[in-house]
Length: 194
Image 1 (spheres, rainbow, N blue to C red):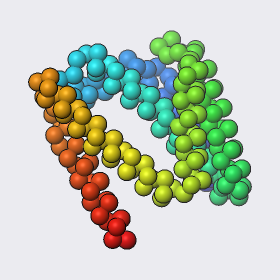
Image 2 (cartoon, one colour; image 1 turned 45 degrees about the vertical axis):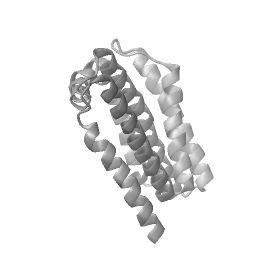
Image 3 (spheres, rainbow, N blue to C red; image 1 turned 60 degrees about the horizontal axis):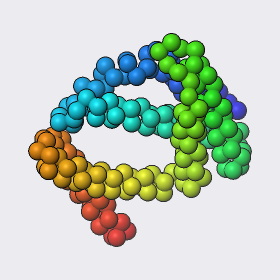
């Protein structure tokens, strides 16, 4: 492979390594993320803010390893000219191995801890990216966008109803929920015209 093919995934592995240090600990991410969560969810209790913070951290695991697997898939499929199946398995294997090494590294960081469940979560993100790459990025992105919009519209509507019942302000949900529903409606009409 040419350096242009393997430098992006190796660079992303370095980013993941840096995030595995104390700089990426829950304490440090909570310092800047908790105020953002309180801004978006003004009526949230401290326990709810902590739960959303934990959820965001787990979603970050999925995302960072999905990106890593996608970068390795691209490197193997283009640079090494592997078949899509071989590139997918190689990308998944390297990403899962890096997840294991990453958690091993975290086990030796005082403010972090190694966790087998995180290796499985990371590998799930990598597998999702490989499946998306094999299915075709555009089709996968379209399906993921529709799923996320449905989640935002339905989840937002449910959260608005719960907030109204509890007498809690909903803040930005009054904007994001209708925007998600409108995007679904416009996307469906646009798809029918094609």
